[in-house]
Image 1 (cartoon, rainbow, N blue to C red):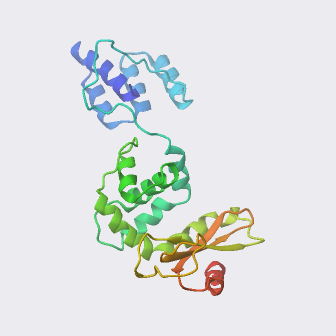
Image 2: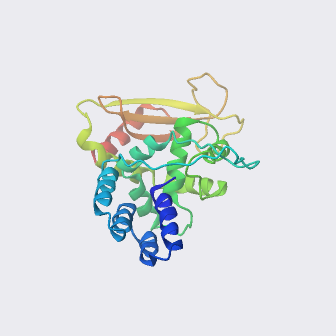
Image 3: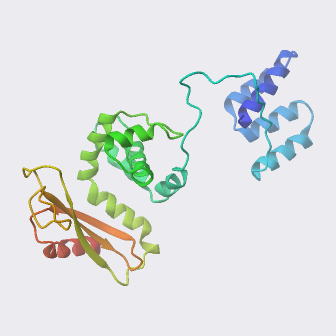
Length: 253
């Protein structure tokens, strides 16, 4: 039971006794701590209000929770959710990705929440890597379920690809004061596709897994601590060595 639910129950009891309409208004308009102060001040128990306020500020407020052995869980009702992504959510906001997505969204006409799509794709990729369809199904298990549809993910990928350099530059600006850039490393790898015909940048080239399929190559810059700085994607039939110079200019600029 949340603080507001607990207080709401007590407010209803007071209302039933004949009284505090203003307390109900406060419950609808004030934060939990303010409601505590208002509720108990109306009852003349200011000291208890002070103690509860102090407890909440110190994250030690204890809220009683009632359980009933007779209550049954409805068939099909979800009662467990995945909260393991919350530490990633903190990092997501510290990197400024939400603000970056909002700035990008202001330049496009789409209606879906780009930040919500990107953040949940990141969580799914780290915690349960799979296809976009499987990732979308995994997102339904999170405490904060997605408010977008599968087709919004595919549409967002096009935008993220166009804005890739912008996103990387913004993240670098946010983190550069903590970077160890005395030495930079550059490495390349490639990814194969289960297709036979070339398409777009998926070209036949030298697969590092010795696969007879079209590939796409990825170049990655890392700082002295091995933390990625920037990346680039290029066709599978290109020599990876010349890709270093454009990436170097991108980092230095």
